[in-house]
Length: 208
Length: 208
Image (cartoon, each protein chain N blue to C red):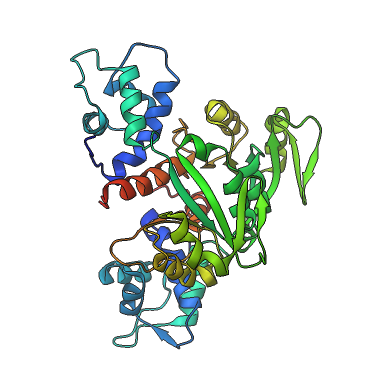
């Protein structure tokens, strides 16, 4: 299989293209349709589609919708199933374990870890272990991705343990900017910043 | 009160500055300290702090830590309390209602709406109503912010109802790029994109 890679910006737009196309019934879809429907720049859309599509778009008709859907799903990794552990099984961690959408996106949460757990407990079909066992179990599970939903105070220490245990991709829901080695990627879900942006807009009308 | 406004990029970095400074005990903190600790560009940090701080940084010593903490908290709107409704009270919606961190960030979720609810139910101390009542209740509650956690299929239709009911800021957890009028702001939490970025990195090592 040819491995292609995309910019983060392209990857961020792909789920929106996919949803738009899956909601249509036409045979073809053009960059212009997508750009108009999603409020994006048409040149940008054309570049994104050229990067993911295995076929060229045809003048005036655009892309065949179904093959393009397949290509985008492949680019987004929906075909491959990733496994992850989740560390910090409070309200948010539990919600993420229970979130059915992840399966569809190709993510399986194989285990959880939490400081408060003494022995093994189960959240639906996912086992949750004491955080003490993280060092040992992650290499045995051979998992490379971790979802971090611990408190801010513990985030960097837990992150260090995860990296030592072989984790190479961290989805960070804590409010800490993590320090990691160069070969580890961190993706921040920064709820405080999102909220600040919305709140700022409501209080000042500033949308820049 | 002087109303200042910040770029989204600055607002996104502020929670990290805040967390770093709250974890220190020194009297002063410099742009360089922050830049080094967080792996950011020093010039960028200096600009951000100049935009939020009510006092100038002093050569060689930097900023007084405590006043700067106050200024950042104010810039992030921690002083003001925003109210929001949440639409779609499934696993994710319930987790957000239960998420204690929001209070600290100045957000109070005053009501939920869900298609599946016939009469009023309660999730802890938050009332959840049938979605039919959204049109009526939102103007009466005088709430301007909504958290959208409905399925993709319903997202645009619900968004339209929210806008018609007077909502001006939408925190969008669905996977749909919403169409809204110019006077409404949308902040996307795109979990599919985040996951794609992490998964892509694990499969190709691409981190760009």
